[in-house]
Image 1 (spheres, protein in one colour):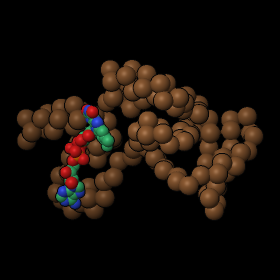
Image 2 (image 1 turned 45 degrees about the horizontal axis):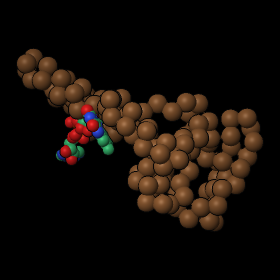
Image 3 (image 1 turned 180 degrees about the vertical axis):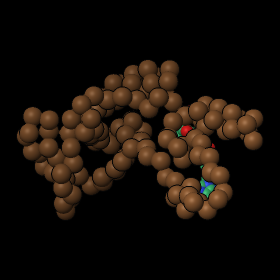
Image 4 (image 1 turned 90 degrees about the horizontal axis):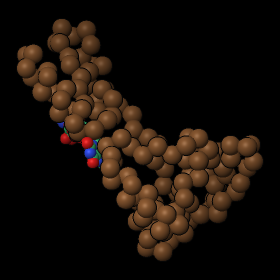
Length: 125
Ligand SMILES: Cc1cc2nc3c(=O)[nH]c(=O)nc-3n(C[C@H](O)[C@H](O)[C@H](O)COP(=O)(O)OP(=O)(O)OC[C@H]3O[C@@H](n4cnc5c(N)ncnc54)[C@H](O)[C@@H]3O)c2cc1C
C-alpha cells in the first residue's frame, strides 16, 4: 500500500518499530522487485521508529536513539502484524471433540504451510 501511494505521488513515510525490515516470508523472490520499486519511488523503511501517540492531524513517534518526533499527517495506516485469530478451538477445549488447528489459525505463515498441514492431517484421519 505504501508503495502504491508513493508511486501515485503521495508523500509517504513507512515506519517500522523493528530494528531491521524483514519482508514477509511468502513474498519470497518477489521481494527483490518490490524493494527495487520502493527505491525508485524513494520509499525508505524507517526502522526502529515506534508510534507513541496519535493526535489531531499529527502523530508522535520515538526513534531508536530516544529522540521524539512529531509528524504531521492526514492519514495513518496501521499494520499491526500477523497474529493467529483462533477463538473457535479455545471454545471447543474440554468439549470431548478432538480439535486440530492448521494454517494461519495456528500461526500465520504461507499457503504452502496451510496446505501441507491440512493434507498431512487429512491422511491421519
Ligand atoms: C495480503 C496477503 C498476501 C499473501 N500472499 C501470499 C503469497 O503470495 N503466498 C503465500 O504462500 N501466502 C500468502 N499469504 C498468506 C496466505 O494467504 C495464508 O497463509 C493462507 O491463506 C492460510 O490459509 P488458511 O486456510 O490457514 O486460512 P485462510 O485462507 O484465511 O482460510 C480461512 C477460511 O476460514 C473462513 N472462516 C473464518 N472464520 C469462520 C467461521 N467462524 N466459520 C466459517 N468459516 C470461517 C474464512 O472466511 C476463510 O475463508 C498472504 C496473506 C495476505 C494477508
